[in-house]
Length: 258
Image (cartoon, rainbow, N blue to C red; front, side, top):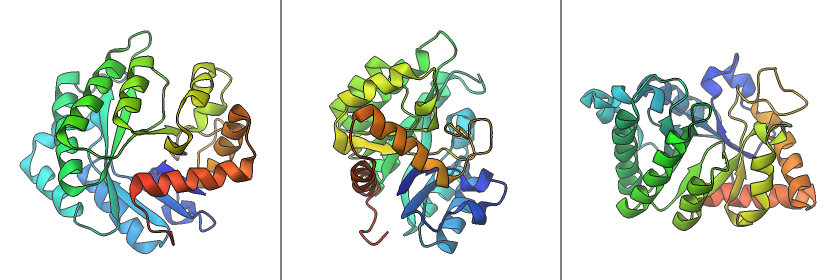
């Protein structure tokens, strides 16, 4: 299986978390420093690939020319398959949506220029959909900028964002919260998505799926999310796992041997 989105650098033992039984894991950078660590992990493990970028909660860091130049250098590395995660987070209020908007556009331009997948993070404040609406507009801008491949990380099933993702031909990534009792809207949305555009992730060490909710997550737990997704879609688990892996390879341009 392929874990389409994890943060190995934030796991208690990053090297141990890099599960050798998985075909591939994409470990995500959230700052220049953590992006460098992601690339280092990808160099050490043959089944780990890296994404580099600045998290929306640190969007203003991207206004530093040195940070932008450092990320552009990392984008040339052969183990880097994506840029991000970037996007819109209105939950923590660490950055304005305007700053996140500008940071997103820079990531999108880089994704288009380097032909990398673009990873989109979205988190709304409770009862407010400003981040999802900003993200929907961002997806459409990214398509206009020439981004060919993008993924809605930790898919939240927001109708307008889903519509924008479908229009742009993006991928939809289901995380461990798919297994939560409260995630009825996410489960209801799954059968309406193109199967070839669905992937699964852990977001390790966060969002552990049932039955491990409340404990630190690891890439190995991606199997629990895939199993629950198979139940939701009404398809055999083994067949879906193979399909999910093909989808992740297409999203990230992974070699067939990965």
